[in-house]
Image: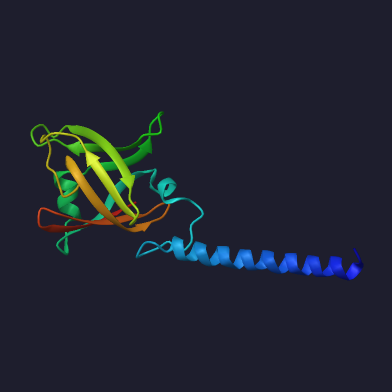
Length: 167
């Protein structure tokens, strides 16, 4: 093998590597911008960004600010986690009881589907005031924003549109 052949091989290898890096960056940008409100790029998976304890910072129901109503009547926090068997769990906690005002909690499971929709299945009973998808049942939440410290989703249930913003 002569010197020119080695130089050409290195040039070709360098060109191929640059091309792969550019294609990888383009793919990352396309797939990272899956949510309407970002993030544009994230090095954490959507699952890892979701695994957190969240509190409702803003809620609109049919376009009307209902944050105070939520806090006064329900006020639940939401925690997404995996248990020891790697089952994806959701825990709704510190909810106000209808009767005693005591804090109660309930839980369920969650999963993502291919459309970046978060599916939750919550167990529980009617012992506190439910609001939208913060209630026993199966719900599909359309994720609008999911960062390490912000989680926004919308859900349509009971002929109402809910927009939750959590931090």
